[in-house]
Length: 322
Ligand code: GLN
Image (tube, rainbow, N blue to C red; front, side, top):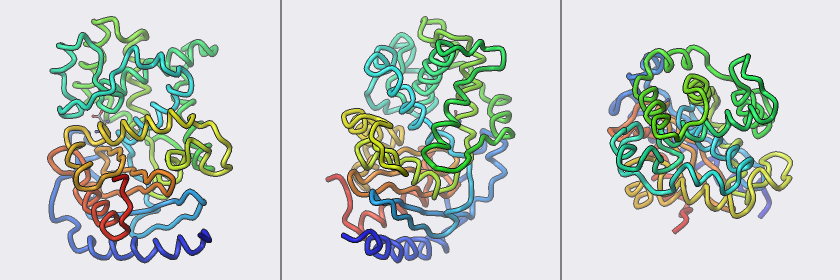
């Protein structure tokens, strides 16, 4: 199909979803308040954007407004770690849904400090540890913090084709109040599952969560996931291999929305990764990537209107992996 026709097909769908949800803004859910810098965000915002495999982009609502991507970043740090370590990554991190909240400590004790999957906080902290090790092996002497953060920025900037940065205020706010994450990292360290200095690992983790991006940028950055790992912009293969790409999508479907993953597979049927900033990235393999954003969250820490928007998108387009 002509790429232009595809955009014209999707733009009215996105416009309709944004118009339908706009009256519901501010009417349910709550913004994440345990990170003070996020508690100040206006809940009455909603954006939706997509990018097709052919490179056409469409968006509606506040799709150009940058927000804190939070746990959506776990998708991209996992990508970096898979690029660099291949299958050895799975010696440290599992691939099972947790069935627990994203910041839970309980499973870690029973499982000797090996996180259930890379998308809960413990798993992402373990991935950050791997990235710090890789940066050190590549000649980073650690004197300037660590360059794992630079590696993350370089990946995001390359995928988007435009500069992406950290929101330092959010990163600092997380560092000041991230007592659970500090506990998780130290707990894993006590089991010998974190190799590096806990402070350097958490500095990487807090900064990845504080990446500031818009729906348009996130739909674009994730687009390698709907085209077998090819770069979203130039189509060069190899951001991830074909098999790795399938695996990332499988993990998103089973683990990307924490203890809501079963419900999300049931009602939406797309691989998704959410964050407490209110963003959700969803993949329709071989077709398109979507990003929705609205800061008010439901009880599982997923965007309330973001999930509604994905349900509406799937209902109107019939696009689902099932
Ligand atoms: N930065 C957040 C935290 O560590 C990320 C959690 C999330 O988005 N689910 O608690």
